[in-house]
Image 1 (cartoon, chains in turn cyan, red):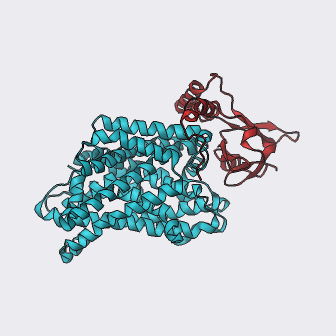
Image 2 (cartoon, helix red, strand yellow):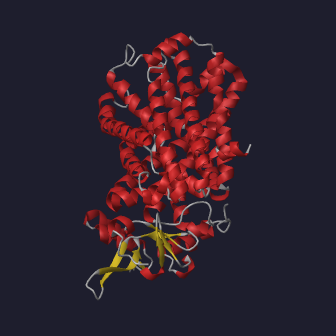
Length: 409
Length: 129
């Protein structure tokens, strides 16, 4: 039981990172348009985030320094500032979208328009960030997010043609009706969604907040190797549900209610209730994650006191940034911008901010001053460098693909 | 401790400064150097402050940062927090001081936000765990 609770940070980080509002729609949309032909990207992304989250968990446990400390130390204040601006904007847009996602989940349950729920959702979010202890927060929302396992149950009870799905897995080309450009655009979006920078900011800062030491290296690794693959599994189940239900009839997915539809079809009302709870917990968890990350990045760049361990009045600048970010997030939503579009845009920009976040992690994970005997081994370094190359390719391709395909068409 | 074997740029600048209890004090935004009797440069003090950082970065970005820091300063005359190098206990993954943060000046932006914004919200004194 204690072990189960000790991995809730990883589960919350992964569920918030993998199945937040953007991914809920993006995975379904990809499933509906490409079947399982892009599932390999999710697998590649899961391995990538595991490699890098393990590194920053190790850095956090051994040296007690979160990721953004390293970014400024290793890249210098100028380049780190570029990263700060990029990462902050991505995190802010995502935060905004997640607040919208919470409101949309409540709309699914109540049929009251989501814009009316936005201010309430934002206020509750702020109260949780202000008052609730880090551990309770991560347990409640990490575990409630597990309700999304209902997508796996739904997939099995839909009794899909497993053979066809398996064949699509190995087909590394777009299906008829889709071009290589849209295939590339969705591949980059899915990859960026798996490695969004706020995941490592949140995970490493969470490790520091939980006062990880060398003895917690096992906890850190358990978190990484259980949490992230679980997040990946849920996104694959989402994708497969859409591939089974929507792809054969050519239905396009562009709203959260369509994402939930396969579960309702397979499991009826009870399934729908569980899926709404899951979507609520996942988007709320992601909102907590991005809200805190917005504060973490700025506070860690400037060296301010941050975190939930000290009294808020002793981390006044940090709490002000969190509060202002939530207000800005609400303001973006109240322009009636579609939350799903907001995340899709933020994913493309996050692809661009990725290299500046992951390079310093790789550098520091090799520094004996920080890690002593816990520096990277050869395999980790080989994987780390390979992923850095993939990340660079994705970063270079992101914006041209967005323009060529008009956001995926 | 002697700073001589340190590479200032690599080991000192931009590192996190923490106090005796591990509280975050700030970053090493700038350094004060002096020439010793033997003609060698020595680190005399650490400077912490966004204005100091802006001046160090220089260029349009640095000037903007310094200007913003000046605007956000309550008296409009931001002086960096100066920490004499004698109180530096250890330079590791962070720069550890041998004093508590209460003994150091609190940055004016933090003070202003504490008194006028965050401190006024109910529960501001409630510690997490």
